[in-house]
Length: 404
Image (cartoon, rainbow, N blue to C red; front, side, top):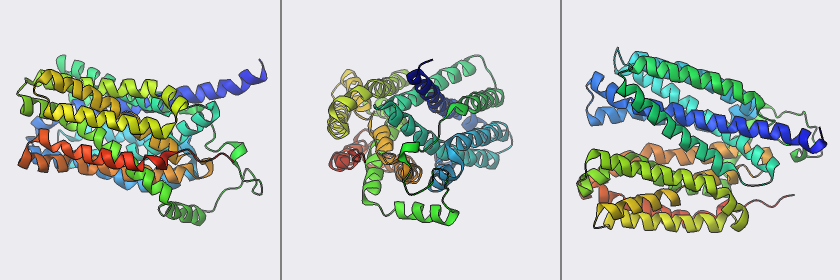
């Protein structure tokens, strides 16, 4: 075996492992989402109470994300994802069993699910950035496309489980076990989180920072202008993506008077367009650079939203959903890559950016719901266009750091 092949083989293995981590995290989340209606009916939850139950996932993630930088820096991305996969198994299984007994066990399970999701997310993005640097080309958007593929697969399996009358408990426990087994086996191929070449010359490669030093570095990261700006850039795109996932179907049904199946189809178009953009995006990023690409895509998403909100016919709204999803595709993964440009500070910076970005998933649904009560859900989507305009202005922050 040649030297090139010896070097390339571990990178290929790490690439496959990162894909597995992204796909299975999406699969787990959408598997739970597919069974929400059955859980709601069993617990007799009103929409407002269901919203509070689902908020437990976001709260768990928000608690986890600020700590994730230190967790990954101390334990490494491989051990972090392994541990979080085990926690997610117990969390999802707990919610699947607990819903038979009441709301509280479900909320506890979902909070732990969100906690595991947050740290897992940061760790796999850190490892994804390592693979991207070692390959020497953009691949992060394709990892996020893998997450989208996982969500589609989870939704389809969930629909099949419902069709064959498989119980929520059995379905989700099997999913939790499958995810844990696949991920724990796959991440053994993760590489070291810091490239040897990135180590500071005056510091031994094996030297580890003291816990107090890591904490100080994490706190200092929150004061870095570039990192915070990237965080708000990611927040704008996360809001764009999250609102589409949560509200496209409702907006189609209420705003255009279409049947529920047509509203669901619009959601599928949005998700497929976003997956497509993430798959083909690396080539555009390598050719044209991060900043021009994300600015153009933000404009595409704005155009899609305008067509979706103001289109006179449902057919045009479908075109709008396609453009909206396509334009929203690269913002989040590009932000993660930008946060991880410096290998020595990747973990805390990705943690900060993810924490800021995830606030969109925490505040997006209630904001659109509140506006929808006053101006209809369809018109409330105009709020997304405002944040996309902010993202266009902040796009310069994702420009790659100069290589030393």
